[in-house]
Amino acid sequence: MKNPPKEDYFNNPDIPIALLLEGEFESVFKNRITPKNKGFDFMEMGENAKMIIVSDGDIIRNTYSEKTGNVYPLGYDKFGKFIYPGNKTFIMNAVHYLCGNNQDLLLSPLKTKELKLRLLDKEKVQKYKLYIQLLNLLLPIVIIVIFGLLFTYTKKKKYA
Image (tube, rainbow, N blue to C red; front, side, top):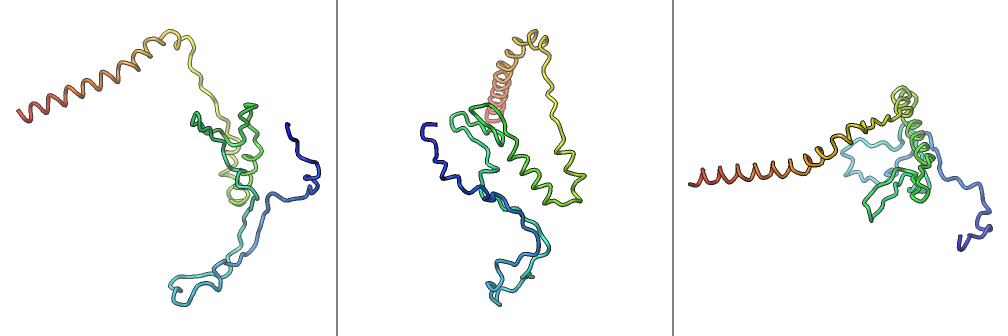
């Protein structure tokens, strides 16, 4: 580092970065709603609930490249070309916990799912490469020309 930070700045190691709250929460609108606006059911105290508060919103922020327009996966280090799974794992576990124990059977297959890449057959790619390139280049042009001719023909027929 060009200007390393002073070690004095890191003297408090026990600062929480996330907090789990459970219980009944008081409504922020308690004592704020006037009697004329009481046309709906209002609860001063909520039911038993859970919430996780994280001190930094960047924990779930993806990196974005303005030059290329690419959105990189959560935890991607563009310099090391490596994905750190920590934040993604934390968010997935937090959502899993907040959904409750009855959701265990639904979310566990999603967490263990593996993606299998189905690669192209290299021999076929080499064999048909020129054919596919020409097809991708010429077919759209031919289709546009055909539609243009049909459009012109129908206009001439209609207004002739």
